[in-house]
Length: 100
Image 1 (spheres, rainbow, N blue to C red):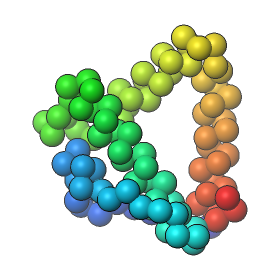
Image 2 (image 1 turned 135 degrees about the vertical axis):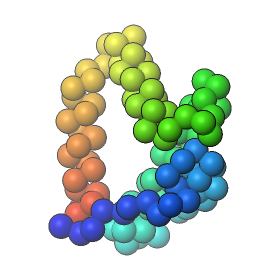
Image 3 (image 1 turned 90 degrees about the vertical axis):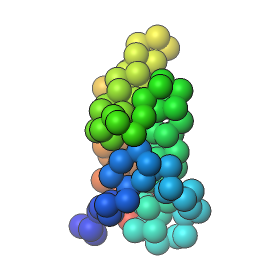
């Protein structure tokens, strides 16, 4: 299995995510996954800004609050959280392997 993209120090906090450039998918598995991470980073920053979270909040807290609110959204829209997570896990594995 190919190495998963691991963030370097600048991207381990909210300020680092703010500096994470939005990247186009270049067509290589590792590059595509870095691009996907950049797209997700922008969602996390928008969520933090919308909810009043900031640099004093740990990145793990911000992401877990976003995921929790996504779960509430699934409840409100009658979308199966378990199906979403199963699909997300399958896609993540395939993307890391370069299959998608």
